[in-house]
Length: 122
Image (cartoon, rainbow, N blue to C red; front, side, top):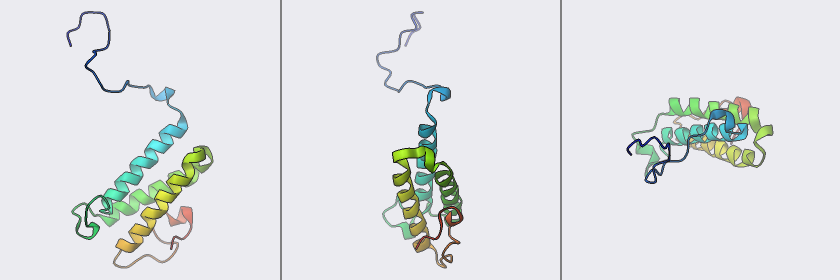
């Protein structure tokens, strides 16, 4: 686009408008962070690949850290998340179970990633 001084948006620009962080509600910021942690943990568990057991992306040490961070965030902010809390908790629990299944030597109940915040996952 040539700058004609009008400051009019380029009609060919399809990118979403940039929002100031101060304009984004806290529940949206928390939810976005949780979804990012959820997605990253799923990648590290190899769940995005056809065969998680042979995934080149599998890294259980990294997955443990991400799942624990997600558990802390979801637990600490559950009261603010409203209708978003239950799906995030479900996703977290699914990751915790997938981690347990992927581990050669599963952690004892209550010792898995994030379980100090969520309680034991079986």
